[in-house]
Length: 136
Image 1 (cartoon, rainbow, N blue to C red):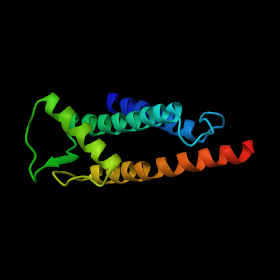
Image 2 (cartoon, rainbow, N blue to C red; image 1 turned 90 degrees about the vertical axis):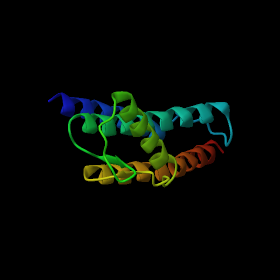
Image 3 (cartoon, helix red, strand yellow; image 1 turned 180 degrees about the vertical axis):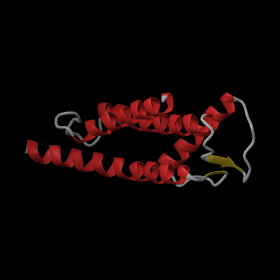
C-alpha cells in the first residue's frame, strides 16, 4: 500500500510541475532571462528526482528495473540511490551511456521519461514564442 501511495505522490508532483509549463503567465515573455533559466532548472530537477525515486522505490520493493553492466547485484541503499538518480538524469537529458539498462517495467518508465525530456524544451520554446506573440 505504501508503494502505491508513494508512487501516486511522486507522479502528482511531476504532473503539477509539468502543468505549470502550460498555464498562462508563468513564463516571462523573453527569449533569455534568469527567471526562465531558473524555471527550467527546477522543472528538470523535479522530473529527474521524481523518476529517480520511482526507480528506487520499485527496486526496494523487489521489482528489478535497472541492471548495471548486465548484472544485478545486491548493493547498499546509497548505491541504489546513486544509480537511480544517475540513470534518471542520463535518460532525461540524453539517450544514456549504456552502462545501466532498464528491464521489465523499467523500460516503459524510461521511455516515458525520455519522451518528457524531449518535449520539455519544445513546449518551453513554444510557450515563450506564444507569450511574445500575444504581447505584440
